[in-house]
Length: 381
Ligand SMILES: Cc1ncc(COP(=O)(O)O)c(C=O)c1O
Image 1 (tube, rainbow, N blue to C red):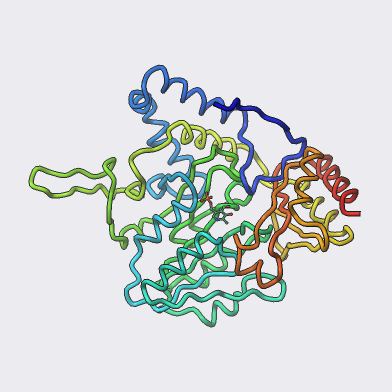
Image 2: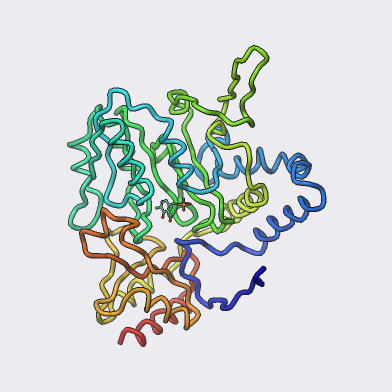
């Protein structure tokens, strides 16, 4: 086996939109759990940690998102959470699905397949000239023939924070299921699913929440669960009886999960949420300093729409490819990421953003932010 090494530890970490660094405590919780599994056996370890795995982590997620534990299901990533819920919705009587220009490519591909299969029209809510979701358009085009409205809270490509609660107000009173992809928002933006008025909200543990990889979750409201077809329920919540009947426990959102799970990662996720809940401010000044400093550099084309923006700042350069900028930043021990326009295709591609450099953090200090701006100034001069 190849030896595991860490060739370069960055001084400034700016790829939290990819995956945030776990704290020493989160790492210790996961590795300690795995160590116990090795010594005792995984099934017995799971039994011994049943309260943490079957209660506390759900309560923690409920506190983070503003709902009860019964509304939470845990998955191995955000796309699984999103597709698992959407796959169980019924679109009887619906003619349209609405999404936005900021839709994540994975969700969008699913929506395209779904709308073809179900004979629905997939419509994109346009943006205003400031790059904000056009709420007036939504207000005048919403109707009871819309089966699903899918909105990304913070997109993958840039820092705009979409007005999910105002959208929730516009949608209230309509039949449509309202799903919010909060994958990039959780951990940097305060979330309250009831104030948002959504039926479903999904997220990943590994990004701004700084939990372990391989974790994701969904809030699914009790009202929506009551309308969902149960479909297949895995053996953690179902049982075949002697007469052949299948008994399914639909008492909480966990019927959406698979029975098998990565317990060590879930233990780490629970710790990461506790840290986020006690961590105070979710956004600091550093990224705003980067946004301002880098936007002013010669040749930089900011990819930075909207007026309400958070911990992601993206740009491209008129001449230097993103890959080269990212490689060069790495040599300065700054972790950044080259994004593909096709991951947020409806916003990026029509504007000519085939790729970009994404800098993302809710923790970067002002001193490190200044280092990043200085490094880019040298490089792009
Ligand atoms: C906005 C958004 N939604 C969904 C996802 C998918 O998350 P996952 O890779 O955990 O499935 C991402 C991943 O970057 C994302 O940025």
